[in-house]
Image 1 (cartoon, helix red, strand yellow):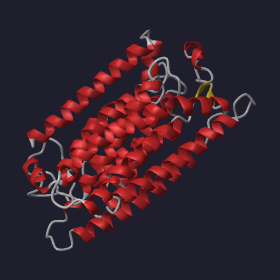
Image 2 (image 1 turned 90 degrees about the horizontal axis):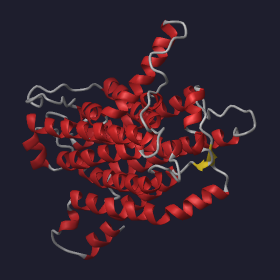
Image 3 (image 1 turned 180 degrees about the vertical axis):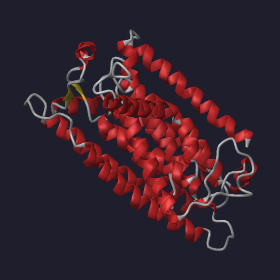
Length: 376
């Protein structure tokens, strides 16, 4: 809204038109919004009796997390409000990618909200507190991936109608220089499958990481910073050419979205750091992960997401390894418990040690990812 008001009343080329500048302002706006509203929202969630009760398939871990009983969950509503407000105020709302991002956020926010709600309904009633079934969540995520893949592909096709190489179809390879000279072009089915895997995979990976005070919000913030810079680079033809990335027109507006996600995550971390006053729940983790995947697809940096989100990859792999090993060995466990952050907790690390060390890993992955841009 502010962006459109300035566009209407101010003539000439000014700093507010720069997407990286607006992304930086979005960090401040989203942070202040979440920080200011946090206490009131937390009190409201407590009044609604939205307190969580940690329940793991491990008695020792249940004992370690007993002190977290009745800490309110569904704090992701704060994050979504902060992101939405920053984007509405500072982004160019006529850009199709921004509109599609709102659709993605609302879809996964609603899915996470219902999942959290079903978990809370089962609290203390000897009911199933697992929330939605896995297949139910994955079906909604696949459906979202199909919708996003279709519209991203065909909107990109309109933008590149007069160009020989459709840059929106190029698979960007980290560490590989000159991949634009002999590009790997994704077919429609490959693009759709890639979108489904990235959106659903990242959404679930962030959800799995959300198991300790401040862990997911801190790691998401690191990823958002990198993707804010990448979205700006890909959206600017001169910078994209220098870094040998595909130039995607209008994709730079997603740096405002990433800035909003970064600011909202940091604002939420203010109340989610140990000892947490509120948990984000699936209401926050599913849309945050899905939006990261959406941005990666639009700016053609899906493989870069595997590096930047290295912590999320490790968390998801630990669960897959645990399940596969359990079935292959007839009930034995590879880790003490999965996801892997709980394994280290049971091995004797204090919770804050696990969180800070995973933050450090996330920062290292972010540095490695940024270094690959120069190696290209």
